[in-house]
Amino acid sequence: MTLTIRFVCQPEHSSHWQASFELLQQERRGWQLQNAIDPISLAAADALEEVWQQLYYGSDAFDIAAYKVDGQQCSLTIITGAGVAQQLIKYFIPWLQSCPVSDMECKMTSEGE
Amino acid sequence: MAFINTRSFSRSVLKQWQHYFLTGEIEGKSEDLYSLLALHPVQTIESWQYVLDQHLLAKPDEWDGYNSDYDVNKTLFKDIQRAFLGLLSCYHFHPEDRAWIFRQIYGAVYEVQRLFPLRLPGEQNLRQIAFTPDEVFISFVVDLWGYFLGEKVETYTQYLGNYISSLIPFIPLSAYGLAEPDVTNDKVAHYTWHTLHFVFYYAALDEAQADDETLGRIQCAKVIKALFDNYNGELGQYHALAQQVAEHGLAGVK
Image 1 (cartoon, rainbow over the protein chains, first blue to last red):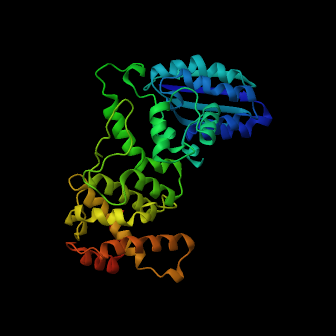
Image 2: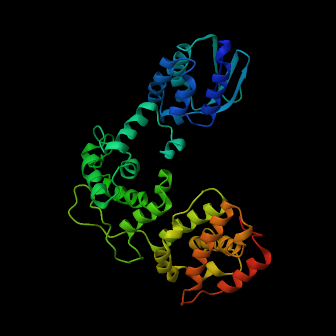
Image 3: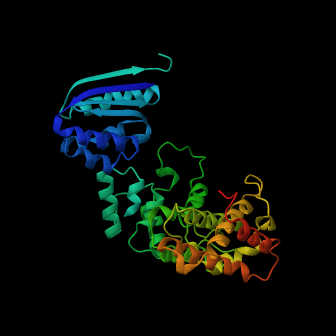
């Protein structure tokens, strides 16, 4: 399944989202990612490990196929199985929404769609 | 604590391991055998035994989800042996310390019937080390190979000269052949053959012309080469292989 997430971040957070997405893609999803998210939201950074604990296989449960931060426009394309995709919608999306972002869109598609 | 760069530890887990690293105390028990052993502040037989007895979640009735037929100790024994061989690489010990740890567990030289010095939880007797000479030697040459390729900045293997010398009689002569040994059917020869190419190559370089990185490799290569040069037993085409590398360098070596 492919999960495409788009949102608008605050202007001062663009570089931090860029860095966070990069760490996500590099599968450095522990303390390094938490530190990168700190400037966006300290509470969200601390809460991230609870999100990973909810996923089958933890933070290794998905791959980042692509990401882009263009000004305030942020997008993230995640590839994973159907079960984890549902879990990401249930736990990761609310976590993202707890950050100072707006206009969140999330679309799930399967191969061939 | 450089090992954390390769892990996905969250901050709270990291804090827990930092506390363990500084104090030897951990809340409850853990399944992370390698971190329990490698991060304990006292690296001795006694402290490793204490870790196994006190901190490791290793008794079948303590594991959630495993059925009663699962032989925890059989798997655990393999894992503990590995912990003191290749897997210590993840914890960035100084290579001389790493070599010292190796000798505590595996001895100064290879012994066919050496007992593993740590008792598994719940067992009365020590078990005999299950690794074959091939398995130990592959671990060494893979470490060396990675070092010569630049994937590692240091290697502990160069400090285990006596142990390596004691394994040379077990290396198949195909490791010294002029053709590359098959990786599937002749694994130890394959890895040794490749590593020897680097050993010959670097040992022949001029130390005076080398930068610091290359100088380390040259000195390591000379140490390893001397072990083979001084071996009195059969070495097949060892000298012809050395000559081939002298003439053609690392051509054909990955």
